[in-house]
Length: 88
Image (cartoon, rainbow, N blue to C red; front, side, top):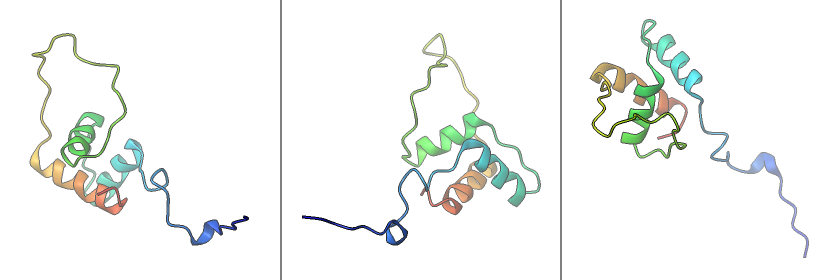
């Protein structure tokens, strides 16, 4: 049995729909008066939205280490970017 698939008619793959952290930062800055967001904030929002993250090898040395939390306005800007890139 032979099957011919035209890749142009296929939906985008999950890899094609993912934006890099740099692309998300650029989108946020362009659409929010130059607002800057960190990789940590992007990761927090992605985790909150249920987006699977790669394993982080740069973990804190103690379990009770504190991390800054993403401010609400930056979280909203990141969510907007994730929606624009069709990640959520």
